[in-house]
Length: 211
Image (tube, rainbow, N blue to C red; front, side):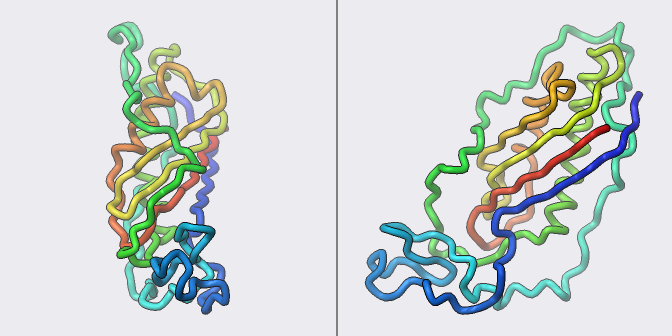
């Protein structure tokens, strides 16, 4: 069993607009054949999300309660099985999960709103995923003689408005890559059902550091 200090970092691409104001560079009639609606602008020949526009109206969360948060994990990578009775190791098959491509062209839903998941909601959901990832580490610890080393794990994924994960990439320090931790963790993120939101996709980056 091992306990360690935990450092978490959450980064959400364009989670909030820099300011709620009207953009001088927003689409004008004729640009992109007039297809760009509120919250978007014409960039060359395609509509892209314009976070400088006044898209904050109707997205006030001041009256919404804080989400329930699971307690922080204080014992990561703990083996709860008898290593001598483990079956032959077989990694999770994550071959059907796409790696995150930050340069991938995404078609914008012109009927979608401008909502994004609040950062506290994302943190609460990521805490649930932490528990699943810790199970992956626990299994790996059992096959590693009962313990794991520390290091950093970086998680990046694209979250769609329907709450599903479209693609996910994970990199980690060598001690956190043994016995299928990475494919198991990718599956945990991919299968997680996030709350729905009326908006374009989000790219979420999350870091876990175990010492």
